[in-house]
Image (cartoon, rainbow over all chains, first blue to last red; front, side, top):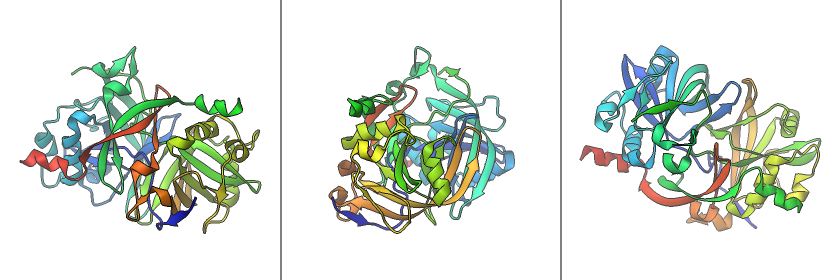
Length: 189
Length: 189
């Protein structure tokens, strides 16, 4: 199998699209990003990478809190919109018709229409070059009731989507293909 | 829409499964993790979260280098195996029949069968609690020739998969549903 070097690039599959929320000058704003991941389990932490010039950063700096909202395909347009327009110029909450609610973390606005919402407090903010990598401790998780099965989050009801690079397209989730922490043991048979 | 609080959890969709590679005591080893993400674009950086007791950490500490390999559905079993067995006990390269190659970063072993390979140098290693969040600068990207279309990585040929929690299942990628940085602008019409 031959390989081609394409230079240093951030090529990982799959990448999410999440809506990072903050209150900027006392008003909720949301930014769509693909560069988010889990950073720690005990205590639960998430990392999000944002360019310093992003309007949302201002709110995160002001309050040291933010939210991570996982959109479903039902609000794909709204999620995409939050990645192309700036809160400095438009009221994204109004444009997207988002219903906002709050949990225990002050000034971490949550979107009702997103099936999964994480409330976060800033733990660290690393200046890595073009982006700040913001590590947040997850203080609470909210899941829409209609996305639970036996009290557990159900991905078939959540219906999240994937951001794909470099094609810059959104993909739906596909079928279940195997059980994790299990299918690999077939190699030992 | 009503919501249920399920406590602080690391609930993000989608999550990847990548194989983090390192040379431990001069021998290549790979660990499957779901907690990986992009951290920066200029220069390109990736973050991976590993528990300190993981065997792979030893090699990353020794060499300050590592690799990130994106598996395809063709080696789903092998990828899963690398998440359930420890390199302290088994030779995963032999068990998985991985063909290893190297690029410019010393002791960052790459898997030929993975369509995408990133060579990384450690930039920071944060102790966050249960996990180390390791930030690596991506020095080179390799893509299998048969996964390129017009010189660009093609997800339909790469055929990566998704790790889903809490169901602990792997899903395939689904259909393209929209164009990013574009479909959202329909809201302004």
